[in-house]
Amino acid sequence: MRFSLYSELQLHPGKTPQQLYAEVLEQIVNADRLGYDCYAAIEHFFYPKFSISTNPTALFAAAAQRTSNIHFRTMLHALPYHNPTVLAGVIHATDILTGGRYEWGVGRGHGWIPLPAGEPLDEHARPRYEEAVDLLLTALENERFSYEGTYFNVTDSHVVPFVDRKYRVYLGGTSDRTYTLAAERGWGVAVPPLLPYVALEKQMDLYRESCKKAGTEPDIVWIHACHLDEDRETAVREGRDWVNGFIQGNCSPLTEWPKPPAEDLEKAGYGFYAAGIMEGLAQVPYEKLIEDDYVWVGTPQDIIERIEVTQKLCEGIQEIGITVNAGGAPHWMAIKNQELFASAVMPHFAGEAAASGTGA
Image 1 (cartoon, rainbow, N blue to C red):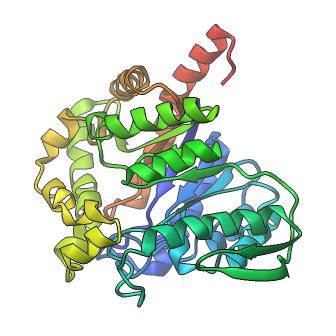
Image 2 (cartoon, rainbow, N blue to C red; image 1 turned 120 degrees about the vertical axis):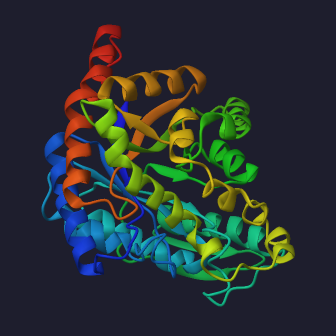
């Protein structure tokens, strides 16, 4: 079992962007010291309460100078807003600057990004994205290449700098095609945070079934907001404001900004964002979020039990990623969560792995 941290870099009132980035860098350094396997960050644009992580590769290049072992993962590069051949060079350069510790994923991005980015919401969104994925892989894996497609045509091109290596790659999203594509490619998937297993069961089944058909192995990264204390009542009290803030931040593009037209979202394959699911999540009471497994809040033993239940329900989980710094959470509280999870939760699963002979 691998363990990671995931951040959206949500900017809530009371902090400046400079303060938030400084805190995140300190949290990454601390995570490296504590033995976390990876620090993952979203790439997102335009909506500060959701994220100001517009350039995760720059964040990771800075963090790499201060750390030794921890890996870095963009979760995910929003591919529609990059030229695939240019992004290939960015990925290779980031790998060089992080000392070979870079992992990445690609996705379409959220359905509320295209309009402020000046991109159309139309029926070409999905096929153009899949062709962009093909071109990105072609550029990453071949020092010289040509490509002929419907949306991209490249003749005798090359990527600089070029790194000859195989990356660990992940997809994430809400559409079924995300999970079948990942299985076909032999890639992992990262589940969206703030959703219980019951909301993802069909897609997890689809991913595992598709892996079986394709002859690939499932690699599921399970991400959850997590707040811990040795005392359960303290954990519940402390976690309330930032967990609710995390959810409000995730919903803010739909609750605080003009919504894209529902028919355009459907046409572009972003039907999830027209279904009212996010807005409904914002109405779920905090205690219900804990009870129904949207978030993990409690003692280390409570969190261990939640993870074990999820493992039994969801075969193929290879990594647990926790979110601890969202919703305007104080820096000290994020550090506390990292420390307590690393000292009291991670060793339990390392011990299980050692006892079974599978390794940590």
